[in-house]
Image (cartoon, rainbow, N blue to C red; front, side, top):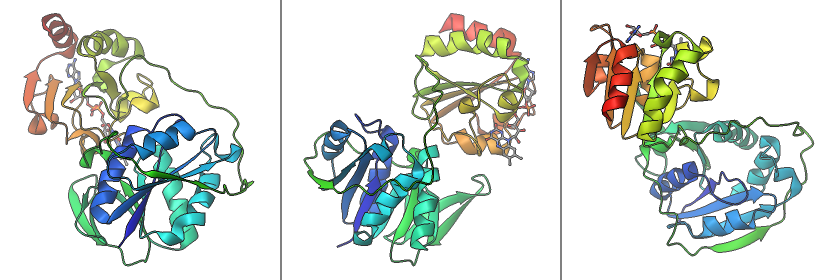
Length: 311
Ligand code: FAD
């Protein structure tokens, strides 16, 4: 029987939600699913992983070199156990995209990136050309290294499992990198990648002040995350971690409100799987209207405050 190893993303206490989506993909690719929790004082995270439905074993490696998620050290730990697995599965997040290529290169196998559908143990679908075409890829290597697009797979149930936890000997510090510091954005708003509602703004907002002044009240009222087009990010209206699209985050919320965003394919690549799309744009020819469920041809500076008042 084939067994997949999902490399957990965690904060040493709990498992990040993207891992739950990766577990669902792993269950479709292999008969059995194990989860690796490599962390520092991460027993709580290992216990949380053991509770996830469909996981039959948790491998727990605990050591200081894993404290800050350095990809060089984590890759070495994955390689130490990789021989037992048919699939090594990572979430297609910034962390997963940092780690998976190292593992694939060290194993000298091809990586299949951004899997959106599992057709069989070795055949997968992935978007190409900013999502305008879907490639079917067969991986013939003995070990398949996959990154999984979270929005394409349901999250596995976080409770209901009762997996064994096996303690692993942690690998030594690879000595290739060291942790210097971290600047974390703290926000009371939901995380953009997993939010149920996203209010996003584009170049039309004109300044960082207007971006916040116009969009924040609506986001607050709806309990939404804020998002932005790349043009808005490049112009400094919104921070980089709000960017949605091909080179930003991929989101698929229940509701996506796009205000003053034209709908370039690179933006659509990050949000077109949203369940309901509302576009506010004063140009009736804006391409965003072609994929919007509801289109409001209006000036956003009057329409968004009016929407906010009405909601
Ligand atoms: P614009 O295209 O300038 O559109 C602004 C819109 O606002 C227009 O439709 C206009 O009619 C409307 N508008 C103006 N004033 C008002 C008003 N008062 N009220 C209502 N509407 C108004 N883009 C991304 O977003 N994410 C990515 O990840 C991304 N990756 C890229 C990767 C590559 C390799 C490349 C080449 C490009 C990428 N882009 C990405 C950029 C993308 O091509 C577009 O340039 C960008 O999405 C445009 O952003 P925008 O819609 O905010 O701006």
